[in-house]
Image (cartoon, rainbow, N blue to C red; front, side, top):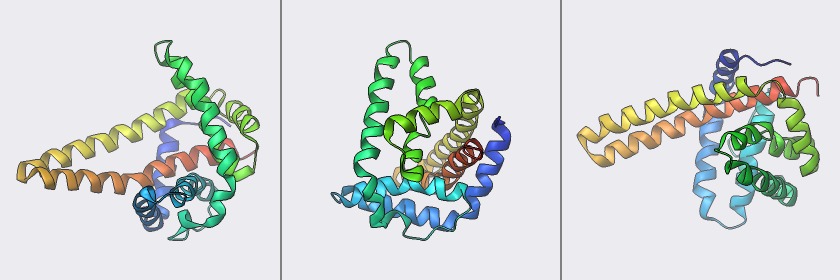
Length: 198
C-alpha cells in the first residue's frame, strides 16, 4: 500500500480528534505515572498500544494506559527498543541520514510487538518490509505534523511569555498535551494503512 503524506496527515488528524478526550486523559495518566516505578513501564507500553487500537477503530477507555496487561510485553518490548537503538546509534555516525532511514524502517516494530505479539527481530523485519517504498511519505507526514505542533508551541509560548514566563510555559505545555492525540492519530493512520493487507 502506497502512502500519501497529506492524506496520512488528514486521516490521522481525524483519528486523533475522534478519540481526543480519551487520548488526552491517557497522555496525562502516562505523564503522572512516569515517576512511579514499574507502573510507568505499563503506561509507556500502553501508549504504544493506543495507535494500534485507533488503527482498528476500537474505542479507547480513559484508562487504557493503566491496563495491567500492557506489562506482559515488558521483555519483548524493551528488547525491541534496545535492538533498534543498537542499529540506529552506529548509523548516526554517518551524518544522521542512515539513522533516520533506519528509524523510519523500524518505527512500526514496537507496535507489531504489542499488537501482533511478534518477536522483536521478526517485528523489525516486518516493519522494514511494510515501510519499504513509503519512507518519504512517512517522513513528510510526521515532519509536517511536528512542524505545525512546533509553530503552535513556540507562538503560544512566546505570546504567553509576553504576559509572564510561567504563562508562556503553561501555554506551551497545553499545546503539547493537545497535540499528542494528533501525532498519535498520524501514527495510527500509518499503521492502519501499512498493515491493512499484512
